[in-house]
Image 1 (cartoon, rainbow, N blue to C red):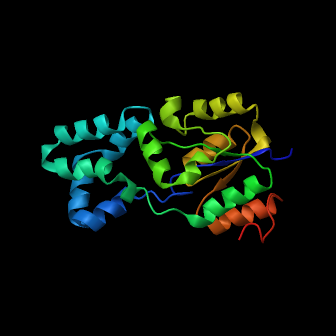
Image 2 (image 1 turned 180 degrees about the horizontal axis):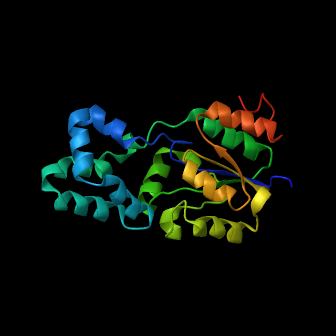
Image 3 (image 1 turned 90 degrees about the horizontal axis):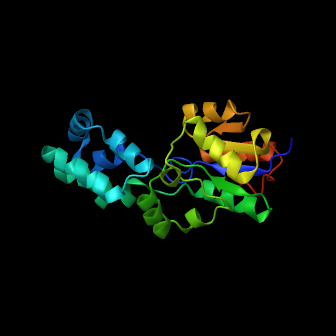
Length: 206
């Protein structure tokens, strides 16, 4: 079957997402390790990805952990520093695909307010042909339902779709539905895959 749409994850595919690296740079690795051992910040963020309000959720977690209050609030107040930098080559691939008339979808675990905020800094987040954002969908990868929702909304399924994500569990869930998949380990590998699928030329994928 012919690929009819390309699906991009966002975190670590289009924008680097390394909260631990951010905190290491701000409070040092030792304190960061202590904080992450004491507070499940990724679980806090998962609530946001499922649709909970960004500010309310982060600030509530900060209030519940007063010894780390200021540091936890950074997850919100300095969030754009955490969700950076852009992976420029991946953005060029997205643009090149669309320039050839290939629809490009997002499929991302991302909060409602945090996504809207990110889009003010990264305009390409408003350029997808279809957006599939977990906060609005109230389900996160790798739950099978989120893939089903994309299929139902787009009318595409299985080998119609090729999906790039940096997490193996998310890729495996898509592959189980018959999607073509690419485990993203860097933009050049993704570029090479798009060329091998005949979706871009080497020059277009540069």
